[in-house]
Image 1 (cartoon, rainbow, N blue to C red):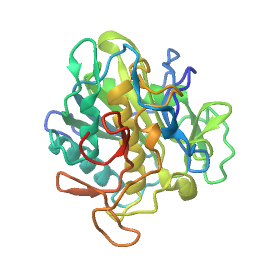
Image 2 (image 1 turned 180 degrees about the vertical axis):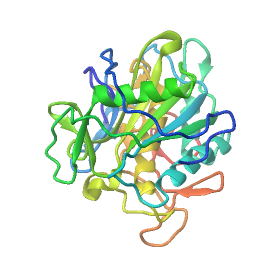
Image 3 (image 1 turned 45 degrees about the horizontal axis):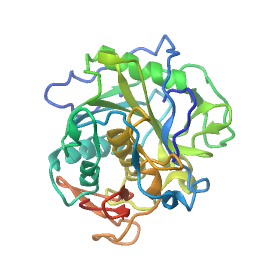
Image 4 (image 1 turned 90 degrees about the vertical axis):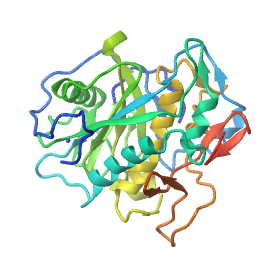
Length: 321
């Protein structure tokens, strides 16, 4: 969705070889207050604009892009909350598959290579997976209030940002302009980035950043998409798990952060980033059966992902530029 000039924030699987072993952690005890603007919001299906692609090509506004990227997954699932049986393993495999597919022209991420910055030229189709962490510590008291009947706790921007900051520090994960942290919360967990904009009613995910220099922390808030299926679910299960719905909006945030993590690189005249312009459009499936379609083959995995905007072809694409 559109870039919003508003202040914000947005843990038992396999780790990358260099990542620390999984461990339980303590609840976040501090709240950070220096937030970047909320960007790349995936509107819930009922809020999504049918005219996202109508503002022409993306324009370059002088800011930095992620020439290469390393991804990290944080799963926050306290006792009393749950995710589907293979939720974490499917998402973790997705990040590994994205990394394994680096350089391929036959997937949607290749479209990002046409974009560039004034410092180091074009984006490279180069992703690595840095690790994952399961946090089973209790959520703090609700820091916001949403109107979604399916949620039992609401986490504010600051609470989510503090969790990302704490887990990244705990694991000594590198920060900066080549790292991105994805915050996955359990089912029935809501969040709001201000009093009027909350998960499932207004958005399905978003990305932002906090800190500067070596402490720059690029992150995405990834609620459990199937909490409200009518709002944030694709309806397709190529991996037979709720993770499939969350992976779709994860890909949206990932591609947008690559091309516009700081909000001053690539977006169109209406403020839309590459993922916003193609949200909830999926193109032609490569295979699968009804309810289990896939349109991307990444590594050894099959996924159902939205398309991304290509300036080269002036349309939404699934492969190439």
